[in-house]
Length: 195
Image (tube, rainbow, N blue to C red; front, side):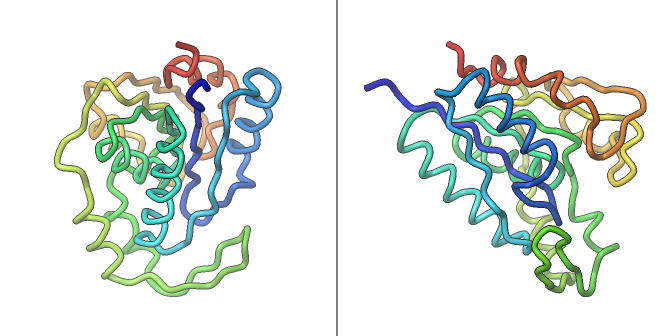
């Protein structure tokens, strides 16, 4: 039996599997590559729990065959950790390259607009994120997609952090990365599902 190819989409902070890019990815694969299994886990809102959940999904998928990642925003950060941990490839869409710098702006109670879940962020979460930052990355394993008018994250942090990686930097846009679907055929190729 042939190895199963699994694409795992990791959504961002305060998001869900119903995010627009996750839905576009699901629609594209179902129409064009039905043999590729897509997994879009609902990641917990607490960063430590989110990484643990993503790690479990990757381990499960690796037991079945090849795995590639798409990570959006905070999901891009978790994807980076998992790429280095399991020697994978990832496409990162407006990723949070240094989330420990942004979390302090959100200390206190938060509410996930998709799930309604309420939770609290504090200094322990930013410390944990800083301590999980990979010491180095393998540049050939990443493709960075970022737009310069991202209103949530400074795109320059990702450009700097992923220096040496394949990068597509577009003027304009926003944190949602309008036009993402244009890249889906090339994303599948980059993740080597067609080989």
